[in-house]
Length: 129
Image 1 (spheres, helix red, strand yellow):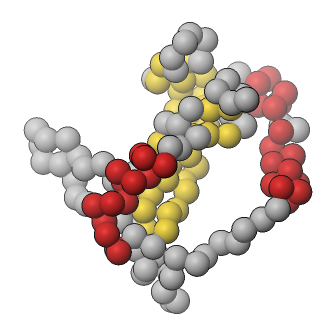
Image 2 (image 1 turned 90 degrees about the horizontal axis):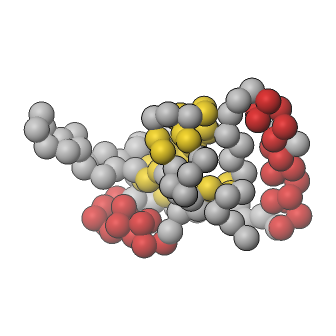
């Protein structure tokens, strides 16, 4: 297997962004009809990225983005996790040059696990202009 260099992926134009996102947007009514929250996009802050990758130094050459889901209630000012509608979410995980997800270990029985990924960014359409 080839090593990851940090140059994977490609930059795309705003036209390509529209072409790639359009099919998902057309599913909004169907997703809502299934009783799910429709998520157009998620925002992740630069400072949160830095907190995630700074401790990793040069070990991190990029990110893997997983698709996940949980139940969320979007009816109030704050999103409530664990109740409400099925909601698709993104999970961003640092990756090393061998293509392996970087994990700084799992917490012991009475200790929290290390912060090894990023999730839960504010969503569009409710938090975007």
